[in-house]
Picture 1 (cartoon, helix red, strand yellow):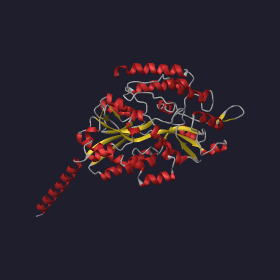
Picture 2: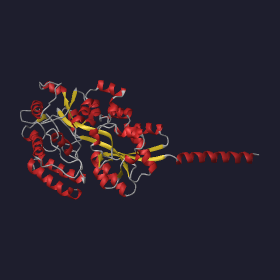
Picture 3: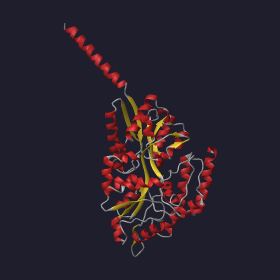
Picture 4: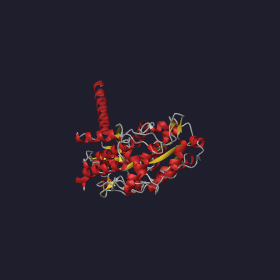
Length: 430
């Protein structure tokens, strides 16, 4: 009798374990590379979103891998792709699109867009963000943490300098005039407070340069990523203006300015104005002990800024089930409610108009109207600089920008050198 009971219990336990294993086997696992590149508790926010997604989708298991900077992340993703161990989905720079295509690392989203709901979602993003997400009639990236460059300014320091704290500089001339009043020097000429800082060091110099070329009404490349226009007279003029801020007007530090330390300098009052991503808005809101403002890029001939930030990409090695799971994940992460909350938590621009119509976003912009600056600037935004062989072409441009800002080259010579080398690198793609 006892033996029969034990046998029955054993069979029941085996059946239960088999059911559990079957349930585990039906879970689709996807690895998700996410870059940590901007200040703030981003990883905690992402962990929370992944956890909520898994609760809503118990059949999908998302393993978040924090892969370093954007540059680290694309390098790791491509290395993993070549080694046969690529993630199924990743957030990488929108400007990595051509490189990822050329390497055969990613697949377009289009074959997965099959239902009316899918098509409605696919068509819901701001056109300005899709400019760096589509090429050749296909959608290769889905906008997620996207941005424009905005101008942050310290209203307390504006008041102290006799400037209107509610009126940010709107033109290049006004920028120079304000920055001159905001720059503080002692009797020996030592600067304790700069009028403005525009980051130029590291990987993002080219992006900040577009915040000068775009208002000067000139594009740096074509939409196909096969040609650059770096020696256009309007590009050279923009480069000259950037150089003049430091060497002629003396309202900005000479040499290169680090991307990562610029927000800290702003928060410490070492600079009254800084240009950086709207993705730093949450960081500045949390840590600034002064009243600050946010404004669009000052213009020379027009308004405008490049877009920036990261897209979702689907990797080629994913199985059909994993691709479907990755699509479900991307759709959930960019849904109106989640896109709105992501924008509130980080400062990135919510990527669809529908996100701005949610109750939580409407309430947020009532409290933080500065969040509207980056969104409204999308109307005059252009695609971020991106070409085939993007890393090498961008490095050429960055190196020549830094040569100008360190006074090693004149603006005209630097831009002609950059154009000549970019033309050589892109010759095979035309």
